Picture 1: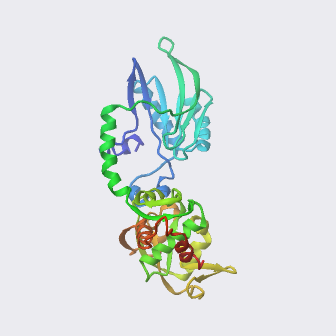
Picture 2 (picture 1 turned 60 degrees about the horizontal axis):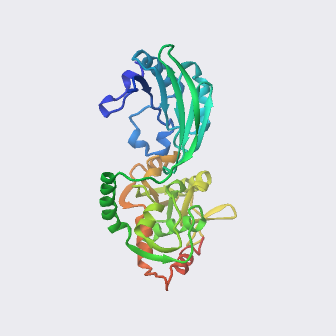
Length: 350
């Protein structure tokens, strides 16, 4: 069976799209990241096969040309390093532009007769390229290209009104003040990691260990007033907390292999041995421990195996940010009574 025949068009997925601009027909072929099952919840995409980029283009591009495309562009969710290799591998297919994604890189360059463009992140920048198409000779010439930062402009009044309505409604929740901190808690700091994981154990006192991946922590908590919106920015995904049972050996193996990618609490490493933080007792390899993880890594995201350890993990339905919100709220902090000392006390026992 060909690739095109197996694409689930009933879900709105198509092998390519033809778009006519000023009498010129563009063929647009999109490429999804082959590591999608590792960077999203694998169970969501379990029915999809993610095949190689070159294999895909070698089957689809000839079909796009046969359908009438005069210029072919390939927007992708692929980082620059892979994109450079791909463009070289399929140079014979005559693709005129590749767009990068996933890594939020800002770049503009050529590779053979193609442009490689990456727009950067958070809509702060863009890359551009100019092509000249000669209809008489069916030839494409590469022109100017480069990178720019987005500049403020005049918003469309009708769109701005819609945005303002939604912002006003969201701000009712997001602007709720729940605390005050005298210093910025940075995204990658041990303080941030411990704060999040320890608050999980506060909310679930019967659990022994809490673990959440660092990729789910996205921003700093800035100095000053802490709002609901502040915490949603730090923990923006719709992950929930899963409670499961693991052996001591499984906990240790996870921490040894993935410890640099995890915020964790309830255990600590003492002279190369993992022990329970509260008691100092070593983890019993055959003992059973109650562990909290987020739903993304439980389902296999980022290569974790938690669902293999306990296929019957219990979804608490508690958003992974909620324990942090609850703990901050209960401290009753303010500018005159900041939360800094309470944080130090919470994470004092590593």
